[in-house]
Amino acid sequence: MLRDPETPVHLGKDRIEIDGQPVASSSKIYLAMNKPRGVVATASDEKGRETVYSFLPQNLPWLAPVGRLDKASEGLLLLTNDSEWAARITAPETHLDKTYHVQINATADETLLQQLRNGIRASDDDFLGVKNARVLRSGERNSWIEIVLDEGKNRHIRRMLDALKIEALRLVRVAIGPLVLGDLPKGATRALKPEEKQALDHAMLGQAHESASLAR
Image 1 (cartoon, rainbow, N blue to C red):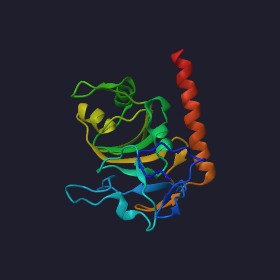
Image 2: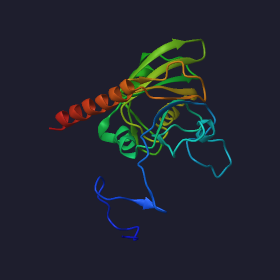
Image 3: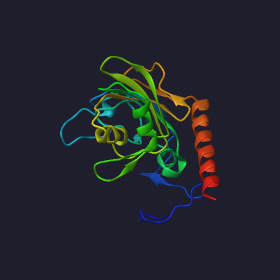
Image 4: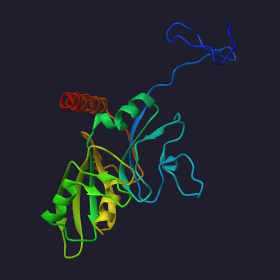
């Protein structure tokens, strides 16, 4: 019997035990959450701020957030214990669309939308672009716009708007690929349906093939 924890393991062949009890692999969990504004997507926070883990049901295995959604942002957040799947979701080469609804302190027009589509040089000289942008509705002082990203740099949308001297009043992620937030209440979570997980996998595969074709 081997007791060295660094011994290589052959999954499916070797038997692993702790205190004489076999170790069972945990089932894969895929959750969607409507992250409220003002909470952070980390397990703990050095500033004592509330985290998304306070909204999770009890007795779940360890789950990790998939991708970024900063404290001031809200909306669709995925959590899973499937690290390989999470890595595919966030991989740059996957180019999985993320859709956001953004309220800004300006009246959006075609000039602004075209600036976003053309890409903007941020204050740190990083070039940021969007896949698409359109107006959802406008008032006298504020507008709601929809922005679709197929990449996700840190504070991507906020940094683009900052460069244009525009403030994002609210930023809500409403979809990741084909998965939409829908009417999930704030702070609530639900398990992905098998067909939703399959649709995400199919979308990732399709985007990867498209990116490979363009690279040839």
